[in-house]
Image (cartoon, rainbow, N blue to C red):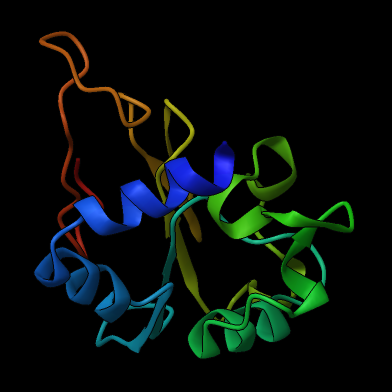
Length: 139
């Protein structure tokens, strides 16, 4: 059964791994000393509306916050698994933040929105893992 498989999986994961995963931030939101002065990093991106509310819910790790649901689906979180709907820069953050994410399998370096993850989480010799140098915005 699915429940049994889940229980076996949870039991198989070492406690140190669980603690590490539980310690990870869902969003990084920090002040930086380069323009525009704020850096927001989230796995896939943010939905176009209510960006600050999304950031707040992600900081709280609030799985019940409807603002995070993709198309109202309680099991899909746009910030983690969104695609076209999270590529753009939310208007609310324009001029205030640099928004960075990966997840999409392509690179896009804009003035206030950066996506870099050519491998899409599946690195190969032709699509290696990537790093971003800031403030130069160099991959």
